[in-house]
Amino acid sequence: MRTASQPSSGLPNLQRRLAEYEDLRKNFVSIKLIHVKREFNQAADYLTSKTLVIGESWELDDPDEIVHLRLVSRIPEKIMKPSELPSAPATDAVRSDQVKLE
Image (cartoon, rainbow, N blue to C red; front, side, top):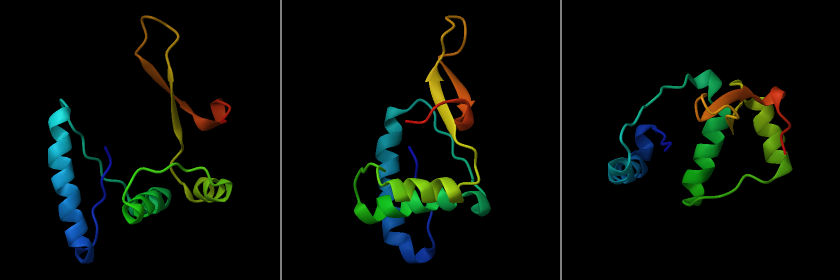
């Protein structure tokens, strides 16, 4: 689950998101909150802001948006794929330049 903190002007929306978080967290054994430095967060900010405006789940399928997000993202993309070795963990992280993106 991902949530975003906002300036005080977004307080009502933040309170609603906190209530949703409290309800959803009952479904998880553990939750980890991670601070992402602003200079690495432009792509995530865009996606979060768009989701908050739309107010529901949506798919990123606009080629121009995808190109833009790839250009502004300063965090290397991580793609998870199932491990092929039975003794290995369930997933392995690989860099996006190691796999073909479809």
